[in-house]
Image (cartoon, rainbow, N blue to C red; front, side, top):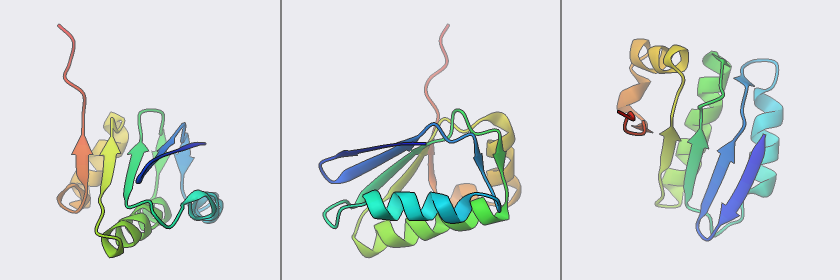
Length: 104
């Protein structure tokens, strides 16, 4: 996992799996790297092959933290499998999900 702090935004990337096996360590790493002035969180899901309910819980926890700081969580480039999970659970209504424009 890669964490980059830039001003009031932390970007999280290189997440292969986010589930019951690693969601606690994910939370610990993110919160330990999260300065108090960070309001916005960007999570790149382009390499995420697996996400379960515990992983969703970790993302919801990030959303609560960002909201308490008057910030946002933006999920970027979810893989088709992960996007399907957001659609089925209706979490796409809770999060801002951004996909890049397709190249022609």
